[in-house]
Amino acid sequence: MISANDRLADIGPFVPAADDDLIICRCEEVTKGEIRKAVHAGMYTLTEVRRYLRCGMGLCQGQTCGRLVRNIIARELGRKSSELEPATGRAPMRPTEMKILSSEKGVE
Amino acid sequence: MNQTSDVIIIGSGIIGCAAAYYLAKKGVSVMVLEAADSIGNGGSSRNGGGVRQSGRDSRELPMVMWGIKHIWPTLSEELGTDVEYTQKGNLRLGKTPSHLKILQGLTDRAVACGLDVRMIDGEEVRKINPYLSDEVLGASWCPTDGHANPLTTTLGYFKKARELGVRFITGEPVLALKKVKGKVNTVITPDGNFECDKILVAAGYETREITSSVEVDVPMRKQKIECLVTEAEPHMFDQMLGTAEADFYGHQTKHGSFVFGGSTGLEPFLASDKAAPSTSIGAACTCRGIMKYFPALSNAKIVRTWAGWLDASADGIPVIGAADGAPGLFLACGFTGHGFGIGPAAAYSIAEVMTDGTPPVNMEPFRCTRFKAKV
Image (cartoon, rainbow over all chains, first blue to last red; front, side):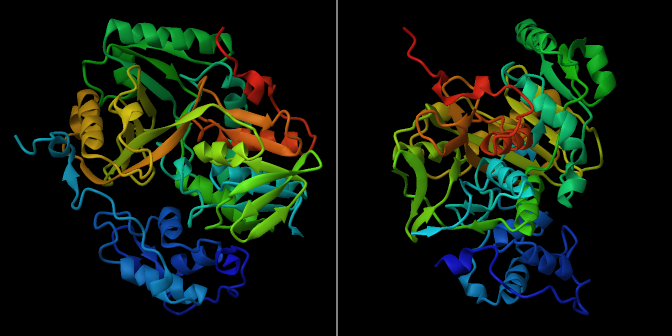
């Protein structure tokens, strides 16, 4: 399966679109055009796009935009979105104050 | 069997990506094989982002000092990616007289290597960073240290190397290397055999298993590191921070979030060295460490925690260079948790070594033959 993972694989040129200014990740204000360009720069996985652009790294941790980002990447790669591995979910589930997280017993 | 490229690099961390870029710039054809699905999925995407000279082993100081002078300041422009390099100094903090003694020792050794680093008292520390608690008695202060974004640095090198025609293949684990007529020139993967002139293994701890197939071994062990990041906060300070106790380190990013790493002291005694999930005791311990120094951050919200593995070499500094006794094979591994800041200079140096060029610093301290029995 080398071809699917070869980062020189031809996915065609980046073609600007009318809705490229649309904000997809609201927490980090990442647009559809930025995500599409990242794919053409070689970022073929959700994890890479996230690390490169910060989409899904804000307060909601991608719970809002995760599916949208996945569909945009899949379409750009010409693959099914179900074929793409999700980015790793990370603890904590909700943003948590340092003074609470620091206490292993919870709030004292 | 197919001749794929002049050089095959195994591992797409900052070393693999940057070495691919520097070799491609010299006109060398390069293929990079990465076992994970994503580029730079190991320590290169999981570290705290320090670009630091102070606190380092004096054997690796000349290399990191060269990189901070010649590569980091213009790296964003060179890669066409914002690597968020910030050169506003490093404070290594102490709260007890024994901390200050540790810091004084590190400082004296660094000054002997020509680094601009000095000890300052608590008052001067709080002039540089007014958010630090009164418990801080002093610190070592190195004004030319700083921090950068490990994610965009690693992916920036990847992007640029790819533009120069480097062929990256992910999800391609290397099973073994093979010697042919005394020369290591074959890489074996589940997809077949690849032939080349030279091989660079920069695969962190996993280097060990890969090179064992040609009887090359670097004594290393795996150690877990854990980090956390807060939500974006108003700008507070620009310095990179560490402590004499090494209970935490970190900085505020360009984005406003604080990235901190830390250790519990229990990392060498983990039940499993397979998966690397962050633990509840890890983040809690790091938060307690931070709040002792920065009471003002106790209400900052943690949005994410993560963990990774570092490749701790037997003497605490990396192996960078030809694998003695295995012609054609080169190594860059064992960075021991401080490989990010030195990464660009290490990759530049190994690219020089592999093309019979001139590395900018003496490579002798990084030879793989230096590990000897103690008696």
